[in-house]
Length: 264
Image: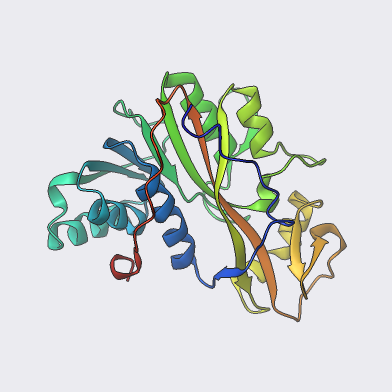
């Protein structure tokens, strides 16, 4: 597998500079990873929103075409409009609906910036058999069931489970192991947050879901379960872009391209 040789790094012990200050920076991190590692050909952007990641990838990789999937129709329409205005419309289209319900065309590459905070639509996915998974875990299981060969790039805050942890949820690495997938980290850093940010506002709910997950306060990792109800000081949220793969031929990763000019 192309990605299996990438060393597994714990984001809290590796160098973790503040690299993101806004959700657009999250998108840039994900886009850079896809640009560097995409195999070419069709790709699916799961939860594409207004298409920021897709547009960055299309601008940098003329050998890639993308289908965006999102439950909200209006962002999809805006993404198609912007793609057409930038001369990328021939390689981008979108469909509206849940990725767990709409028919998906064959593809070898997928990427997603999934719902990260409790309260966001789709944060949890309830399957017909009554099981309740985090969105990203349900997506991985879906792709592992239907795709023989694929790569999936996924942006997550690390308390979602980049590392093995105890608690009421499965880590990303555990899900990859269960499904027999290759796993690697292609980006690790800190997302800056202040007391008025959406992340800070979600801390009580995050503490209930991820009590053992960690944020960084004054340079020190602190478990969410030990945080007070409100955080008055700025803090960092460890985040990563991981790539999961199955039987993808080896292909050297390309150097990431700048995406700032297309994520405005």
